[in-house]
Amino acid sequence: MPVRFSKLIDMKGEISGVSVEPEASLVKQGKIRVGHAKNVGRVRKIISKKKKSYRGIIKRAIPRVPKALQELFVSGRETFKGPGTVPLPEDVHKLRDILDKMQPEDVGLDLRFFNPENMIFENARVISTTIYECKNFSLCIFFLPANGVIPLHNHPGMTVFSKLLVGKMHIKSYDWVDPEAPKNPWQPSQLRLARLKANRVFTAPCDTSVLYPTTGGNIHEFTAITPSVVLDVLGPPYSQEDGRDCSYYKDHPYTAFSNGESEVGEDEKDGYGWLEEIEMPKNSQIQFIEYGGPPVIDTDL
Image (cartoon, rainbow, N blue to C red; front, top):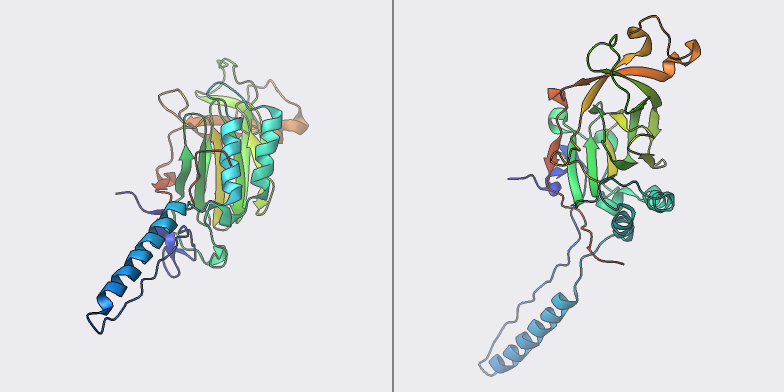
């Protein structure tokens, strides 16, 4: 049985101080004391009227969706056209602008109770939950404990928007120098040359980062300095059946492997590295849970 998103909530528990339970209206029913038989008819009329009133409330009730989250969903649907496509610049700008303005409460994180410095994650596992997914794109949230790591991994054929909602995180990312380059015979097995795109600390709130299928840091690693929350928009989603499986890597300094023929200048070597494809580290497996925050409505605003 999947773990409910709300199971993360515990003022003294596994992830202390996270409130993600969606809002719901509570109907309070009053008690009517009947002291004489002649009051029975009047009481029945009152109950009948109340039932009709309740039915009317139920019919008019609609899910309470944060406007920003719904706008993000609609923009994602307009931005991602399916596998094999890259979003248009104007669509990228619109979606990134929405993400830049998003707050933790837009996905159900209540900052009245949320204190990242006091959060305790059971087994220090990275946790992920999916808000929405279709064949064209997905909306996902990642919870990382302090020192939690999502290892260096790629996003084949995908465009990814990442928004750090809470916390402080170190991000390291690479792009292949030549995505289609054949292997050189002198290179050790499974090594490919990559250009370093980012290697710094980000602190929320900060701008949204965007990576593309071959540029922008398609291969990246997250290391949480404090407990952190990341909202990702991926298009298209990972799909092993469609050839978009996730691969993991270990990076080596550029100078660690050389045949004496320098491919980059001496002053540029720090901006490159050799990436070795590896199996997913066993201690870095992500725990997936059921989303229990505010939903999105599959319709236009």
